Length: 99
Image (cartoon, rainbow, N blue to C red):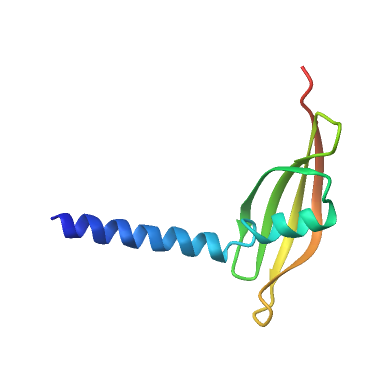
């Protein structure tokens, strides 16, 4: 019975690892955002809508000396040859988190 638990755990671990590596919102959007805006503090990023060809990545960040949380949605396109590449910013929003 223990071997089935270990097998199940291994399969789930591999699936999660693949999802992390294949998802451009985990590494790619953070890296490219940091290159474009090195002084901004990245708070969070995640994928919220996608397919095999496109994915929308939400990224939340703060500008230096500001309590406002800014959010953008970046569109990534997978052309099948070069992998995921940034296409455009499709939405932007600002939230004031001051009490």
